Length: 334
Image 1 (cartoon, rainbow, N blue to C red):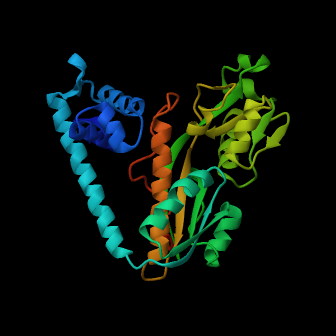
Image 2: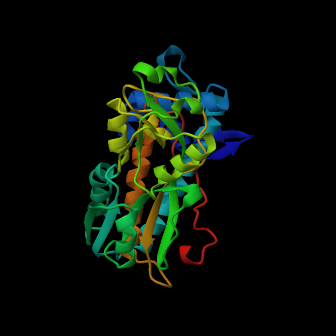
Image 3: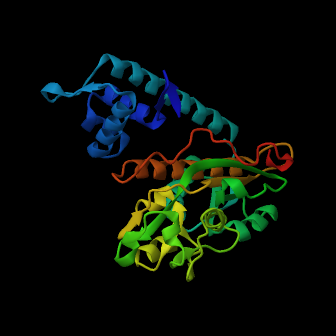
């Protein structure tokens, strides 16, 4: 995130403000951005809350920029121009991208990649033939090393991060804190601290996964042991099990806050959850089609995060601006 005099600013909200200024109102900006007026209004309200001053004067039924609004709308316009320049530079760099490319992703990301990334590729790079594969770190990394996958999106844990293989580049797309979520019914209402979770049913994760590493830290810190442990390989399965009142779970915050018939506990969990993108490259240069596919996945995940940020239950933006990848400093990560 950028900042202005110590205030944290979300670039996406600045882009929304620039659209309001450019198109002359919230409804017009929503049409131009291809979203709803409610979503634009939410982004504006959150930006005004961030800076602590009104940015748009809504008196008289019209949306007029205040002095502060004009300043920040100008910042948003410059951000938009910089993004456009970056897209043009990328297009020039990978303009000859063509051929088969394989994208691996966990099941929770597949709908967004299928709906957004593949059409994005088809429109901009008709010479690329994408293949989408459900894959996780355990099977996806060997496939990446063997050249069977070109791009791999994985869930990871910052404190127990997956090492980056030689010939692969990695960067963090999202980072989120972990939360404990419990069913809302029965004796779960008495859970007020970590100690109240000992001896309760849990929805766990397969060994070696991000959620398993995080739970091991939490268990060691608070002496929590499950009475029975259900196992959910995907966050979607964990969400369904918690909603079905089968047990508590440790999940990324953006998943935990959206589970029906469940309550997020108000205590800290060590560590943070990452979504990382791995992409194959040659020893001395990137591969045009792989670069294009990686950018398509990035666009899809960014769009998904923006939609999430518009939801009323969203506690905070998921995207972290230029987060440090755990591979930085490793010889195989560049």
